[in-house]
Length: 47
Figure (tube, helix red, strand yellow):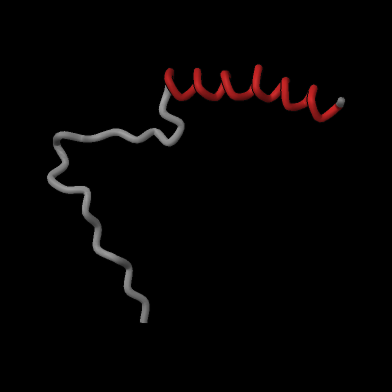
């Protein structure tokens, strides 16, 4: 019974809250800059 209640709470509260937050803002703050010529970065070499 407890597992069913926890699952129900997760499905009704946590999942919708996460979806709403994703729609309203970008959690990783990704954005494109049109002024930047390239996003390519040289790989770091160690040695």
